[in-house]
Length: 441
Image (tube, rainbow, N blue to C red; front, top):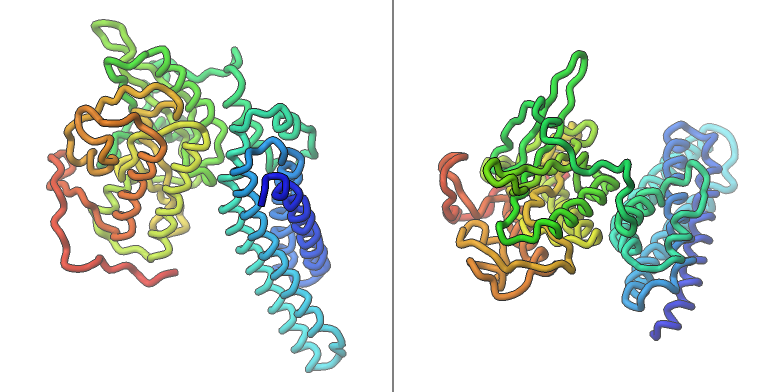
């Protein structure tokens, strides 16, 4: 199918999504007067469809601004949505057909109860399907913020109802990407500002937890240290650090699996006065606590359900994807740079990627400097191993590092072992079999 054919087809596809989505929401809204659980689920469906329909409308308006590859990707994702909506409409239609003609009496009351139960099951399934589709769609949706088109700026900035907040994150990220920092936008913070915090080590991670006790309250932050290579262009590096911090300030932490950046501290060498490192200061999301590194979890060997382990793998892949969408290569993806927080809901918790110590813009200059540390080279592509890597760093090298981490997560055991937290790393001994995972949930 040519680019022109795809452009014509997507209009029909989006219109089908609107048709089935509207029909679905109207059907379930008719149950609002029914029992409370159905009413709450119908409200959840309405809100989720509102967000999706807004994104689809924007996508339809800016379609001509997308390149052919992006159009094909979006078209494939939209076809999945059409199928899910068609299936949902068919399910509710069947339920309504079976319900028609129900009279009164004890038998009819039983049928009414069965009908309500069926509606709840279908509604729950529909909401889960839309959540699943949204997770597939969102990374490609946020790629739109990188397309240089005035039409996209106009559509994202168009005034909308106060409740229409689905586009706010994309708009803020695009502004952070395409505009210069405002005079009142403070990215770099004085070192004295964090001196009052009590910092606590996170095992097997260079990140630290910072806690400030005040009268009647306390504040928790994450400090993530980033060294400056002596040969680095400090001016360019500072620009990259600023750009990354601005974008991380406007993320949705839970969705992006990247922490919100509060600011950055420049650290100067006491003798030369030259900036030799940066400290990223991240906010800890609400209801998250007690961060541990993924390495700590892998070394501990505790058993978790397969679904919990798989969720960590998905979040790590998402965080790498969104870092790339922002235009950055991470260059330091390994279990030490993945923090897992106790969220009070799942046994394993919620995870986020940190460790932005060698980050740079994807199209920026690379120094081709490395090291001989085997435990770090384990996560590097063969072309990027050793003191003098053979090739410039690219996003594909991050994907290689991600793959090694996913292998460890899948096995749920560490490839690197430590006799003690401060000791030297060694290659973990092979085990005779896979570790036992708990029963999937």
